[in-house]
Length: 515
Ligand code: GAP
Image (cartoon, rainbow, N blue to C red; front, side, top):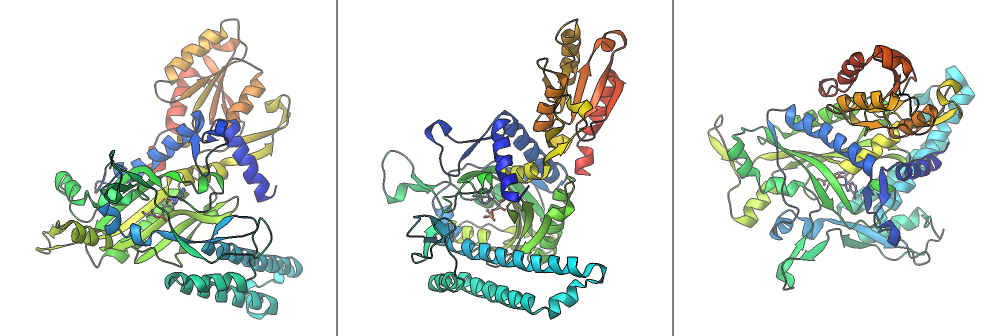
């Protein structure tokens, strides 16, 4: 199945099985705003818990906070967001669609990369075992032209973004011959800057001075609380502050489902270090974060690092962990070395000292910051797309159909851990199943169902990623054993109810995900 189809299937699946709904759908929705359904909220909570435990529980030098969304308006002056948190936008006069100008160029680059990849694949097939990719790259004229073209475009894009050269960006779009994907025309407007923050009023009287912003990142709530937390938690540098919370951005391009939303959740950790040690910590956190992703057990090649072409206004060094979404490799998480940019500016704008006295040095300084920042919703999408599979299964398991849609979710992330299914809804089986359900629900989220054939019930549980299903039958009444079915292998074991409890507890033990 081609990626676009696969993505459409996934979006439809999310709605059908109660993971994600368009916001206010009965009013035709609201652009790039989504609601989580009964399974989506569980998955999201579990991912949040995986992140929080890895950060806060596993590091004695990281503590959490929960800062308010509304903040003093000067925060956003000091942070640079009022002046610099903007994207270059461009409109197509025919389709009336609005795009991020830099994204149009990046998409163009991705198409060139794909072309180059195809050239290489064709040659690989032609030459078989004798194929030497390095040599081919060095000698193939067509490929060299493509590489040259890509380097040229990358250089011009970087220059235009770094120097804020909007005319240069517009010229680049013209020179690349980029057409609007919607109308197919090149009838573009000029490129303009657009601030992404949502503004609102505080209190009853409106006026300039009352304008406040919905936070575009959670990080600032951590910086303004730096001293409060350091003093009350008695942490010594290096230490980190973690936070999960909502952020808001008036995104220009509102596509790709929960990948880019206008209201979303971030999981951010700001790590405060002694100046001069930031590069070491930046490398450490890059590796730790990559390990966190890979520990989930999905294809390790679905993740890669990518250094930023254009650094955000606050960053000294920055990279993304990219994930292979159905629509290509895209940013999942950012790791940024922010220097003393934020604390330094808050110190300047507030007039309050935001310094740390380092007992080892016997002097005070404004700490440097290394930040890890991941979108919770984007992580939900990454997990769902990595887990989603359509596959053939043996008739015995399916009863009626020989294919299934399954979410191969890591068991700790699954919305429901165990389905408890009496084989038939009579002969005392529902009562016995209920008893088992009541015991298991004490330590994990279970689901009880007695309607429909067992095959259909298995299918429904596969579709939401339930890792274990227990079937209760006549034999259960006499010997207290049940059939334990594993989602991924379809393997079934006859096992005592006590044995089931032990197996499930072991499989859901956080230790194996946090180690
Ligand atoms: N505090 C740094 C910061 O906010 P960012 O790269 O702008 O950095 C960090 O955002 C992460 O937040 C991204 O890697 C992405 O996962 C998530 N994110 C950003 N904008 C988003 C949006 N509009 N919708 C969903 N997630 C978003």
